[in-house]
Image (cartoon, rainbow, N blue to C red; front, top):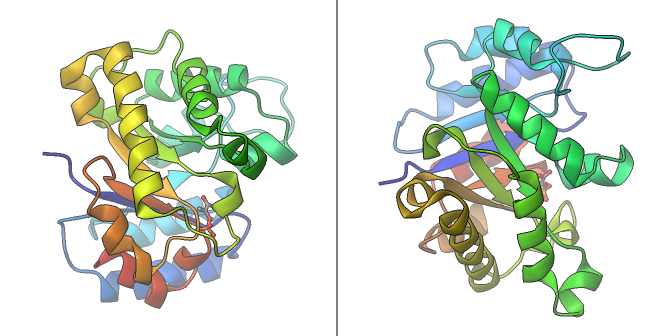
Length: 248
Ligand code: PEP
C-alpha cells in the first residue's frame, strides 16, 4: 500500500520569517497522518522551516542541489549540506530548472544518483511541452526523460524515490491535465519503472501529478490507481489552500 505524498514547491517565494509563519499556520490546520505532507522552501528558509516542522509530521525538502559533495561551484548547495540540515527530500529536474538554468537529463541523472547515495529522497520531475503533447509524442518524450534520469540508478527500496509527472503547459497556468490523461501517463511511467526495477519495487514507488493542482481537482486525480500524490506550486503558498489539498 503506497502512502499518498503531497509536496508543496514554494519556488522563489517566502522570506525566512514568512516561511516559518506558513509552516506554523499549516500545522494548526493539518492533523493527520494518512497523507505525507512535504514542504520545499527556498534554501535560506530551510533551517527555520525544519525547526518549525519538527514533531509535526510535516516533512521538508529542498528544491535543487548539486551532485558533488563540495567544491568550487559558486552559488550551489551540496547533498551533504542538505542532509546535515536534516532535509529528507529534494526536488530534482523541475521544468523551471531545465528551462531557465540549463539542466539536462545528464545533470538530472547525476543529481538523482547523488541524492540516493546520501539518503535524500529525490522528487524527480518529468513532463512534456504543449507542442510535444499536440504532436502526439508526450508519452515517448516523458519515457525518455525517465529512462535518462534513472540510468544506472538502483534505489534500495521503492520508498526512496518519488517521481512527479508535470506537464509543462499545466504548471502555473491554471490548466490542469485531465485526471484521465494524468493517470494514463503515470500508469505508463510505472510500466517503465517495472522494466527498470522489477514489479515489486515499481509498485512501491510513489508517483505524483503536478500542474495547477488545487482543492477542486485533487480528489479526482487521487482516484486514479497510479496517482499517489501531487506536487503543488501556487496553491502551496497559502496554508488555507494547501491544507485543503492535503485534507482531500
Ligand atoms: C510546480 O511548480 O511544480 C507546479 C506544479 O506549480 P503549479 O501548481 O503552480 O502549477
